[in-house]
Image (cartoon, rainbow, N blue to C red; front, side, top):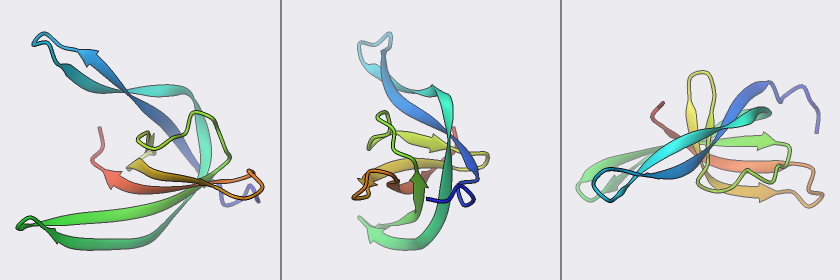
Length: 107
């Protein structure tokens, strides 16, 4: 993989459940201490009718070097956009990790 396309600096966030005063849990997002370089492409955008409403799903494909802490359900936060990881697909040589993501509202 060439280093040139990997020009986006992203922060990896993992979900943490914190007990609240009512006996339940509140979901918080904890930043990873180190950032990662990635290539972001926007292959598709679509809308779909769901339960008498409209669901919009803008997907992105993010390519990065493999790391053990990147998994489904984590978030990647850039300057203007936050992505939720839906699938993590390594290549055959385990030299690149392809992440299929959807946009989520910025924190």
